[in-house]
Image (cartoon, rainbow, N blue to C red; front, side):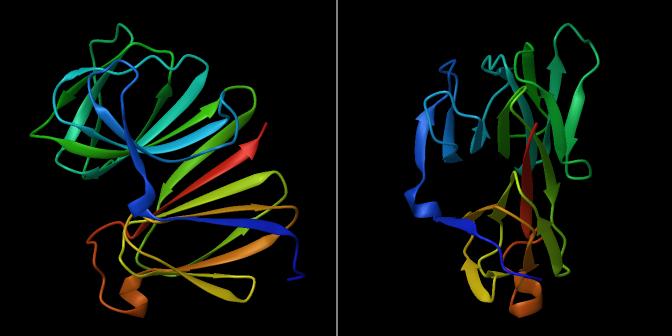
Length: 205
């Protein structure tokens, strides 16, 4: 494939900053966000340690993925039936402006959370598998590759990048670009059972 101009940013877990939730009822670890005060997208991790309300993020679409723990139920709006994220169904999407109440299944959980600005971009969050996979990125697309292995390999434009646990690679390109992701289970001992990585795709609306 013909090379195209692209931007690659590497984020390391040691550099992430913890900050209080907007409603003051917990803490989140911000991984990355788009430039500007009114961000277009933001990726973070949160530890949910007790039942309670989520912060109001009106104007944003949210998706989170269960990383650790048994699971959590979310009651959205006035609904009496909960949506559940657990070990068999990890991903949950909802409107950030909805009233959300969480209920832990059995102890604390850690979740990965992507938020994107409605009307500006849309997103898709996908858990990775143990097999190598090639992703094709195009113009107006940003890829966020979040590693859950201590030894994830990424082949991009003839160069190999290695990501540790909770490191992330951000790719923005001006044309078709191939990115091959090789989990540690194929290149060495796998450090994280289950999901080796998470791929988040952000596309301009």
